Length: 133
Image 1 (cartoon, helix red, strand yellow):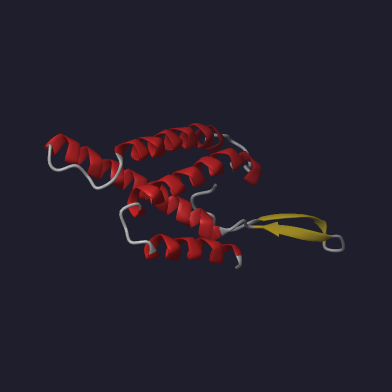
Image 2 (tube, helix red, strand yellow):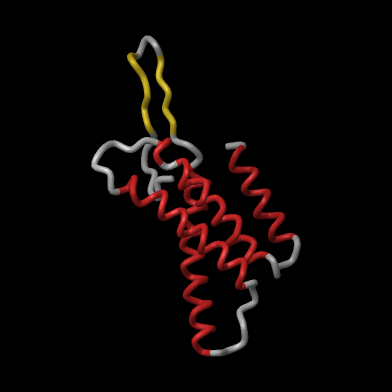
């Protein structure tokens, strides 16, 4: 959602009625942001190998193309709200957040498909553990 989420949103009427302080899950936000950066680095790596006609990269190019489609959809949903001149709340970014999660899953598939089985298991355990925080 927000790439840099420094503070949450405070919703409330007064101190007597209580309030809601909504931050979301910063671990998921930062993980998704790092996956976008990893996707950009992977695209640079793939284009370098394509231009140099060296041995093909060890990942599936069609999966990388899917991640790039998700990146385009993410940008189409994120950029218009980013350019708005008013206060933006979480619901403005929910649609882009879904595409960001799709990017994360696809990038993990690109990089972890050729790894031993224990590496994806450790990653999945850390993702599940982030929801328990």
